[in-house]
Amino acid sequence: MAKSVYALKIWWTDIEVQSMRVDCKVASRFAHTVMTTKAFNTANASQEVFFEVDLPKTAFITNFSIEIEGRIYVSEVKEKEKARHQYESAVSSGQTAGLVKASGRNMEKFSVSVNIAPQSHVTFTLTYEELLQRRLGSYEIMIGVRPKQLVQNFEIVVDIYEPKGIAFVDVNGTFITNELLPLVKKTVTDKKAHVYFSPTLDQQKTCSDCEETLIDGDLFIRYDVTHPQDIGEIQIINGYFVHFFAPDDLPQMPKNVVFVIDRSGSMEGEKMKQTREALMTILSELHEDDYFGLVTFDDIIELWRPFLSKATPENVTEAKGFVKTIKARHMTDINKGLLSAVDMLTSEKSHSFPDMSMIILLTDGRPNLSKIQENVQNAINGSMSLFCLGFGYDVDYSLLDTLAKQNDGLARRVYEASDAALQLQGFYDEVATPLLLEVNLNYPGNAVTDLTQSHFRQFFKGSEIVVAGRLQELETNTFQTEVSANGVKWDSVFPDQEYIFGDFTERLWAYLTIQQLLDEREKCSAEDKEDITAQALDLSLKYNFVTPLTSMVVTKPETEDTDEKLIADKLTEGTCSFHILKR
Image (cartoon, rainbow, N blue to C red):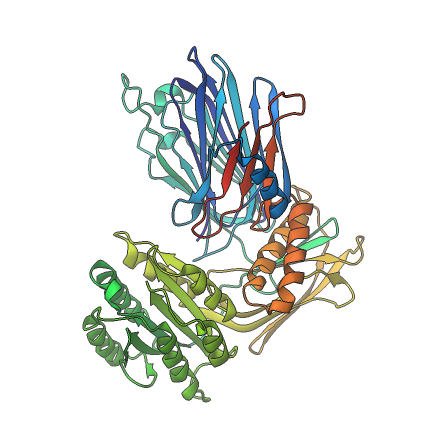
């Protein structure tokens, strides 16, 4: 399930939170969220107000402003180095008052503080956008709400519009008690859904005489759309198009999968226990037409069998017996572990084995071999996919992310918690059912330009492929499209249609293009990196996205005597990146 995370929190001393509103509009999976919070300093002295938001790691901030008694900080997105120079020039007379940092599994933390005068109001407004990704058959919006006090006017408003129709909408929450449940209003028609939650002050209270709030947790909105089971869904607006492709009714492809398991000393204890637990469940869920293998590594490689085995009940039972014996031991040699898996998959390539081959690596280590990326990429050579699961915070996650991207896979961090085994199993479920291999989405060569990625090595049940681009002619009324994959072909002509949220296709195209350019930077040659970076930077500035290449600078109006600036950066793994400068 795709997750989009929105959370609010105010820290205060004699600060009254008068209103909080989350307004999320989703048009064809593209979410535009505006979060507005208004607070009042009831004290007779100046107070520092902290505004904190958890937002999706995949989201791009597009605007942030602060209004204090009619005076507004305005924002501007700048190239990161220019913003950083502006920051450094003020450091000698300024101080850091806020930051952005990793705060959870799917989110990053936006935190800012300002001083406001006695009996004064402050209003924070944050806007950001992201493309929801389909996982396990649904999209998910997770709205975290932690105001830490009763709020006079509290509202969550979510509007979803899907032109092909909405299949279902489910709403629930960790803080939704039997008393609060009737307050969650859900309206679903053919193409639109509306979710509204606005408890009164009394309804927020933990008891009639209490001042503590019940609103402390996460509201989940899960939904799916009606997916055409052939060519997919195309929308054309103002010269830009977006193509969604998600057929779920295809037969499952058999697969070859090798699990590469870290058994180094750092996996001792709960990590190894949870890994064994997850593998026992995953092995039970293998399809009988699948072939599989097990590779364990520390500084020594050990194979369950030196060849792939069909997932018969007998073989699965034997493999489970092997899994029970895996124990943490010595050092970490990810390089040899991965290359052993590649050898196993490539040595048995024949007509009797499926073409869909993948490696699933689970490790908590930090490889000490500098050439591991080159070694693995050369060995795989585009013939299989590599999925990397990094256990805990000490793992070299950036390396795992690059390894996965270079080899048509993806990386995820597994968080050390009581549900780690479920996290492992949940990730496997996403890639457990391949439906298509070597998917190509083709469009007339003289009709489109600036295409996002249109070739995908695999398509898994419950996921979705999204391609966007620009049309050469703005007045195009029809659109020829062809999708092909491992012997299957669809083609169709789509008519131009009108949709609400009129410019979302252009911003979706820009968002998707930037994300893919940033990914491409991780695996391209040194010669191409400069050009790819320049393209991503230009789009980030044009569309006002805070990305890893840009920063958002917020300043007071020029009429102010003081020079106060805020600089917001996009999070990178393990860094802090929001600063408020005060003179």
